[in-house]
Image 1 (tube, rainbow, N blue to C red):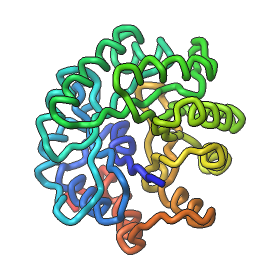
Image 2: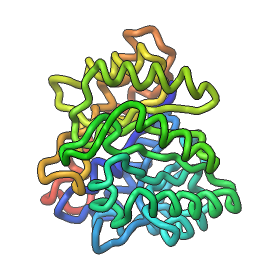
Image 3: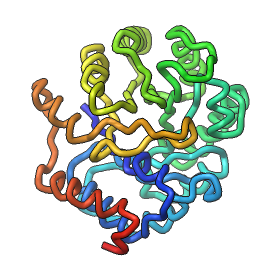
Image 4: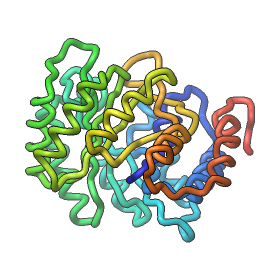
Length: 287
């Protein structure tokens, strides 16, 4: 069981800038909890995503000596991949590949065909720098734009991307519309058709509907889940109103009840929950 904590996803839609020292204090607390991976920042255009413009500086403020948690950074193009790959502290390069043409253009200003070329470029950089690429299949459970969607389309793109060397895929419900039956079908069919690959779930959901989605993915073989402390955030490139992430504390409670062995430090989880509101508050100053 892998839990991926995503503070980057929680922060990226905020209009006010969070001081880098606040981010570092919060991330250093998260690093003590015991997550498999921390999705901590992005090497993307600061004009488009100003909240994560300090990712390079942030790395220098992280205490990685006493943690087994690995770092993942989102990149949107070859330049971003080169910048991220220069840091030995980063283990994973995450690329958002949308199965919706409309959203791919909105998010990266490229078509799906052009984005496949970008994936090839990022893979070349990753191989040379000994990084692993994680593909986020954005709009993986449907889209609000009327673009064609079907589970077979997901499988086709998984096959194409795997042929380029990708072995980790995170199915992303970017706007919070995944139906449990679609989740069940997708994870069941993908894990059966591609047993050598790792499939994760990155859901955006309200507090009322998160559990049915997690249950559907878990019971269908998914063992990699993204979450965000307090369930904050979402994708600002998809729509004006952020849906929210799955609250990490809910994920941990669910898997504990399901009998899964998920080791985490409850003291530091509690500290992170208390620290998070101060971290994102525009009035808190430096904490």
